[in-house]
Image (cartoon, rainbow, N blue to C red; front, side, top):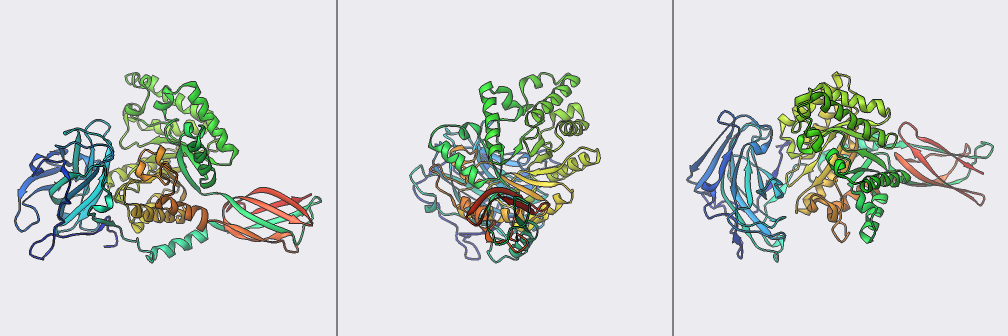
Length: 598
């Protein structure tokens, strides 16, 4: 059970031959799904060779009917084999909903022998706005899952979809007893029964923690030498030295929005303060994407440049996201109109790379050159895979110092289950390397929901990506769940794993304030700027436990020898009534600095 993807401690059990109890439906709710909803579900799949589904009758089970779902070949995405039905009751934004279903697995080829499903409550429109996206697992015994969640949309009857996805590795599962109830806006989530979602390795005494701590001590810290000299260059013994870490060399960062950063009012003021104090790297969430920039006004473009200036003045490194998101969905109208003219299309993409890398040359530490090539490949379908190599080479020709990344999801999130997506990601990276593309890094998007990847399995995944010999960034980290303790514990654990892995050089959370976050429940700070448990976990590690403040006196050779985390330091030297303040950089490759007393 060491590789268990989602370990669940149940709040209740089936009343059957083993004397188990079913959780009663809490009183006061209104049904969101029709009574006996199971026959109303429809099945979507890639066809009978890939999957089979049948509604079956059951005896000696907690439910009378169940859908038997057989995944024969893992599809490209979990939603390409799923059950789905429309709501029969209305919901409003902020309503507290409660869902319950039962699942068991009779056959599975994943590491644990368990079968998986993802429960999704989402809008029926093209946006597919999700209120919950929860992956669970079960073995050959029936398991009951129940959980409250908040509706993120106001929807009339029929405008919401309930989906149960089965597009994982080959498996046979049975799902029944699907219910969704609405308790309105006045009830608290803690008052409703909840299946406790857990994961292996969460315990505070789990063996992996000490191993990670040992790696952190070895690879993230160094023995430093701060030398104090006088105006003649002679050593100054007995000088008092104070060393305070100002910003990590490791990229603890966040996606940001320039309109809020440079805005007026208390929220903008707080936003700037948090960024300056708590992050060493940032990335624009949307505004440098091609389709977004094509619609931006001159004033909006100028604001982006002003934001870059603001970060440079404070020594905060910047990532670029993204040069090419190669799907018609994320390309400007003018580019879509050139799809029948490959030569023009190719030139437009090259011009895009030249424009953005020239604009940020010498100012950005990293650039995502290509985003999500597994799911978004329209440009490559027309121009061929070689164009990806050309994009990388074009960027390198313009900026010789920036680190160039390939960015995609499924590399670490979703329990590490989407093997087809991961294999394509690795194949693409190896193709780029073999073809001589100047790729320097792999960006692993890390959007988690209620299902998280256990630490030991996550470490194996990082080792896999590390075998490419490239830097690794966790580029879009968040945990979208209302289980704040799960959220906090996994924030602590994934940060620890990332910081302890020698190939990882940055973790970027995809926003930090509830008032400006694409998944508000995932934020580190609430709307009123109070710190959430996951925010506390982030700051406890990045600004307290992994932090260095050191004081001491120089020896007869004028040297002070502290040990600390790599980064930028504020240093204060005092001797004979003279005080000098300076900023120095102490890194693995440059662990020494000299301060001159005049």
